[in-house]
Image (tube, rainbow, N blue to C red; front, side, top):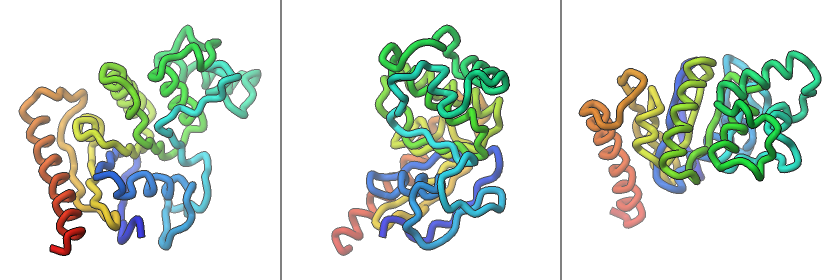
Length: 236
């Protein structure tokens, strides 16, 4: 059993971050919400509609960008939609502006940095105007500077689009910096250990006492999940 007794309600427009130890089922939970994994007992609903398969109402961003190497930036964003359609072309251009890739429309993935490629992947997911955007450690393989830049890009998109976002991360700072609610999972089987609202205004500053205080609270709760795992594994 990977996940057990998961009960979670997320308000429209919320930014939820999910953290927990390796193997606690964070990515599995995200794939269930996305409709990519159907081997479970229970139900998932988005605005009252059951999720039984992948659909345009759930956008998904993987850790790897998964761009088509033979397509340009604008073609990757459009994917199966026709760029010759003026409405599609306009939406693609708007998203290129939002994810800060103006001037790179005709570039191919091999000509892009890792951060730029992830921005293309985000724009591609947003083109279908999903009700929920699901992000599975999208910045995990990036350097610290690029990661911070893309966190700010994502927050800018969230504020503009008001899209509900659920992001899986191993990074406690990232979870506090981005989310207005944070869920900590424990492992074996995966359960929600703690739900914490993050009462900090945006934009956030990692160096403020308020930020550090919340970070310390999250770290303390996170360490409890590891203690529980050790205790259960040891028969304590």
